[in-house]
Every structure is written in C-alpha cells, then in structure tokens.
View 1 (cartoon, rainbow, N blue to C red):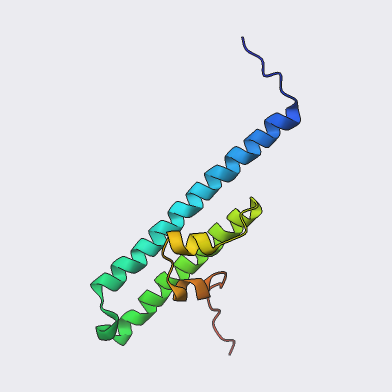
View 2 (tube, rainbow, N blue to C red; view 1 turned 180 degrees about the vertical axis):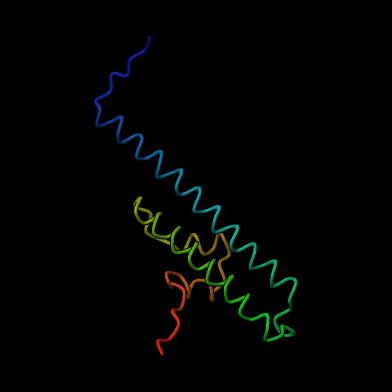
Length: 111
C-alpha cells in the first residue's frame, strides 16, 4: 500500500492544475469545432453569392465561435496566460469572430 506523503495543500494544488489543463483542452477543442463549422459553411456558401436568407445562419455560427473564443480566452487568463494573440494566430480566428468575443445573443426588443 503506497501513501502519498505530500502535504494536502500540494495534492490539492496538483488537482487544481490538472483540472485547469483539462478545461483548457476542452475549451480549445470547442473553439476548433466552432471555427470548423464556420469555415465549412463559408466553403459551401460563397459570401459574394450568399442569399440574404442564409445570412442569419452564418451570423449564428460567427456568434457561436465568438462565444467559444471568449470562454477559451477567459479560461487561459484564469491560469495566468494573458496574451491572447497566440490563440488568434494558432487557431486563425477571423476578425469578425474576435469582434463577437464575449457578446451574448441579442435580446428581442420590448414592445
């Protein structure tokens, strides 16, 4: 039977760091998937030829990618990784997605 002789605070810190790394991985994969859906949509519907009826669907994908980006950036910053330029380059995040980062869905106007 092996016993961990480290102080409990060290064991807890190790568990916290493991969870932070796991969360970063999940959020990075979520961002990758959201960006892939947007790129697939754009490849299937050339923007110059996109009918107005398709624009809300694309806008939704941009907003979803912006939300995923926001969650990833916040998680990174919580772990001390403050420079998000690396994310923008590595994931090739479009400017329009960066502009949507942190925005929630639009609320319907009150009547």
